[in-house]
Amino acid sequence: MKAIIIMDSIHYILKAEKLLKKYGIKIDLIPVPKEVDSNCGNAIEIKNEEDLFKVNEILKNHKINFKVFKYNEELNFFVEIGG
Amino acid sequence: MNKIFYFDNAATSFPKPQEVAASIYEYIQKFAANPGRSSHKLSIESAKKVFETRENLAKIFNFENSEHFIFTANATESLNIVLNGYLNENDYILTTFLEHNSVLRPLNFLKKTKKININFIEFCPQNGIDFDDFYEKLKDKTPKLVIINHASNVTGKIVNLNKILDLKKEFKFKLLIDGAQTGGIYNYNLKEQDIDFLALTGHKGLYGPQGIGVLFIRNPEILNPLKFGGTGSLSEKDIQPEFLPDKFESGTLNVVGIVGLNEGLNFIDKIRISKIAEKKEKLTGFFIENLKDINEIKIYSDTKNNSGVVSINIEKISPSKISQILDKNFNIATRPGLHCAPVIHKKLGTFPYGTVRFSFSFFNEIDELEYAINALNYITKNNKN
Ligand SMILES: Cc1ncc(COP(=O)(O)O)c(C=O)c1O
Image 1 (cartoon, each protein chain N blue to C red):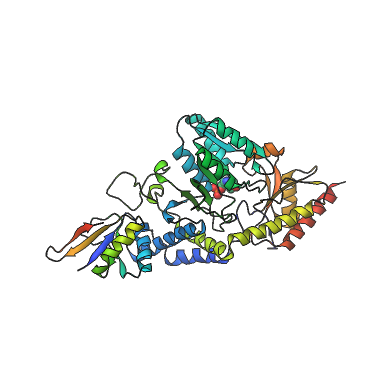
Image 2: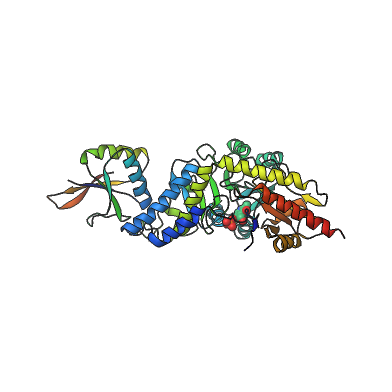
């Protein structure tokens, strides 16, 4: 199951990428999936879902606004789960 | 071409570090897509260059969050954003006689359009501004904004910023610093130094190309943008985003300039700002000490807290004539006249002809100054008859 996070603009995507990599979290920069209504065209894919809690904490500590989406196989859709 | 002795670094630094030119060439050849507008590889690479440069600014100017550094065209635009976006009808502001036209002209326009009330802190050659007068004026009335040119582009005098910040603690005004002449020369610590707005330009002490500037904004909520438009974010909304840096960065950025600026920043970071300041101190010290021996030369700068600028005049020759002779006969580049700062020249008694300004960079060497001193000696002697 995939999880992605999106932000207001590319600046925060790159800022989050730098931070999350520093904390050793496996991520990828990807174009926003078409089902997700996003502002800036890019998203960060979190490779291991177990990292989501840590990701949440790190981004909040750095006052970065974000939204988390998880892919729901039954619905074949990304569902917003917080941020 | 024969060697040019370039002493016009307060206008624009030259030469630039080799990496500045190389990075711009590489960018145009390999990456030059629109940053933050698309999600293809090249667009992201381009956005990464912008991000990296912003992070570099935050590192060098000691501030945690890089989005508080906005890219502009130059110091002039940075100053205009703050003056136009912060001041309202009938506001009272305090500024100095050291200011450049990039502050004086917008202020005089706002005096007409918004009836702002402008007051000047007295000039003092030793410190740039008279701190007693500053204190008295603050006691009289708290200004909405204090605008201070951190270093005079005419005399090189660096104003004591920490003393200003002490007064800010006491009187609680907002502060706009014109750092056009001090960026890359003075070591800012924005985490500790409570500057509200810092205007910078890329092409002087930051060793970048022309056409790129920076504005540091501590509290974006109190400032309106000068430009509104596309940011690549919140495109579904037809109102300007409120978050940084997008609130103040409408329109496609000057990434070519940003990429070059980044290498300029890497250069000063590698050498260290303190070392750059030390070298300039050595150069200005040497120049001033040697010119003192020439009776016909009047010097308007001193060695204390100098950003690397020496203004002079020679008896009975106009500044423009001196500058012309230096250029034509000696390949020495200087800048004569008023240096876009007419009011300080009035205080120095050099209005309207101005002075001849020598301004140094990290790339200048003592032997170049010796050559310039000899040239000035020659001009002085040959003017006698
Ligand atoms: C003190 C001062 N302020 C502002 C400026 C304007 O810089 P720019 O021409 O890069 O906008 C300059 C440079 O000319 C300057 O010396």
